[in-house]
Length: 418
Image 1: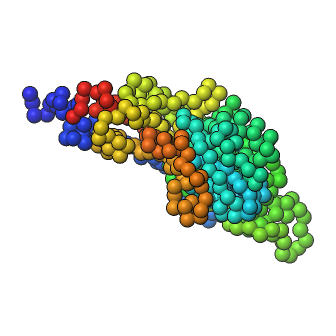
Image 2: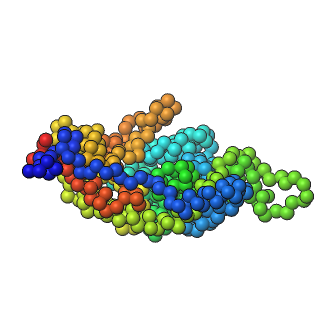
Image 3: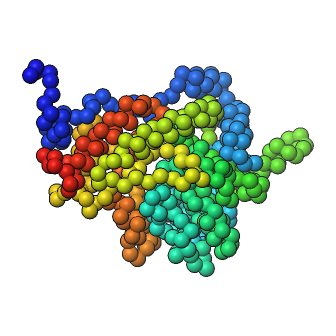
């Protein structure tokens, strides 16, 4: 056998244990900013019109994004966290109110509630979509509940018909957290257009990414839009700024107090171009997801979950779930992560499954009295993989090969234990 040839044992043995890894080439990064995006930013910088009030990029981004989502109004913002907090402000959430949030999400879905002096009440999630449901929401409602934040985790839409029906029955607002679901659809409608307000994030590696940070609030309510638009710009009145005649001299525009959560013209220039590319990007994400679904369908020790026919997943990330009862002695989540990573495949646990375990919740004395059962199980069973548009079919095949190799070694029925 030549020195460059690999033995069957080398190929089958885990890289973590000295075998040959499935791949050595790193995955393509995301985001990658194309030349047209770089040039658009440069053009804004050359113009000197870098602010919402001097340029036109941000106002056009708002108009185009609202049209894309299918709503009347949009407010471009510095980041998605601001979009969530602004949504609650526009809905009139005040100290003493409670807002239901899912257990599996980023902490911003709860911190936005705390920032307004209200209390986040954490609800359990569905084991497949990992989203809040009407049933889990109903279990934590009280007389103080005023709203629910429905997070479309990883791009899988929540079952909004049931959530909206319960919200209507109890007189609650519904905020859609669309940080990971740009382009996802539920019953044919874009996420963000279905609840009272939608909040989007364009942070670092999101589906649309506007140069590090960025966000958008969308709504069909002029009342909510006016409050949001005003607060993000120091309390300016939109009517005073754009719709009224003013006598010569100083223009009195500030009819409320607010803050500065404006997006920049550079961010908006990127966002406008990426919005045009989004259909192609979504198609690539869905192609990659289909390849993973097919390739992992027979891997031992895994549980796959597919969205129902009435939902179009945006696939920000791809999740599979371990069957812990099938793991051999000595195998756990950390060893699996190490083994998959050693094969050259990026892998993580994804969004925090139990945000109420963060010290912030503990220090504030808020959170459930007991661990939430589904969230707790997901914390020990969720594996997350990349499928962004920069990845090709071979990357997906390698992901499946590596996971199959590791799970054969890790599961009870495997003859390959070394």
